[in-house]
Image 1 (tube, helix red, strand yellow):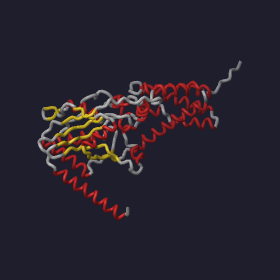
Image 2 (tube, one colour):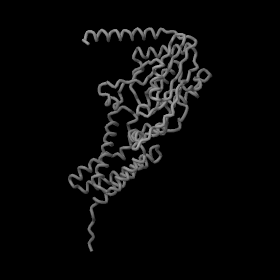
Image 3 (spheres, helix red, strand yellow):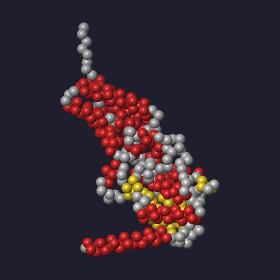
Length: 379
């Protein structure tokens, strides 16, 4: 295909979408129109562990049945991984036909639930217009933040904007932390749970007062009211699957414990150095993203007291045969572990990281004893 023909086809496609958007914004909904919040179930892939939120607008009279999804992003974005880590990856909304949307979740075998909103026809029209304007104008583009800005919070924002009041607010589980709220979603995904626990810092230890997860929104809608009546009807099940996570021989706490016991009991200098160096590299990464990333969840990460980057100094001290350096570094990191233990003693991830604390503590005590300068006894 030559460049000229490709350019003509691209122009025609863009023209089609422009006309389609313009027409879409002029559609008048009938009194039979329904507006719903769609909550999609969790899956076994990392991106689907927390579910998904969307808005459905349905009107049989006007032949409208469309789902607005604020969770789209472009994998072809230049420097995709670094943008995601940095926290400036752009997400945006897309519109799907309802059958296509449902087919996707049937294919992935993920449940879908619907809560119809009890709002007047003029407000349904206003929400429909706001959604179409958001797509056509680029307002639907946003910088993704795990808690502060995601597919759920965007749906909450546009509905509240349409209603002219904060009708939807967090009204369940506000007395527990974000970290605690997240944990049930990791059932059957142990290492994802561990990884999330250690990479997230101080922010996720705050009380979870903000809506950021689809099923939290579903629960909050059940209690929400607008103009002295319930904002949403009872949740209706569209499709439902019993998604038990597949059994994994490695993604479980048993392999975690066995590996750490092996490291403790093998008593090999090379194994000890590898483990502590690996811990240090993870800590170095946490330090980097803490300064580099604008994701607030990654900042002020006290877990670097366990994953201490200074442990990399052991490699240098072993290379230079500096026993005093090894001894002092071991003592410093033992002190860091003590401080860390008291910091997390009331945190949700205490049990998860405690085996790492014990393993690191035992290895550091051994290093300190082996490299302590012996005092000669004079008789």
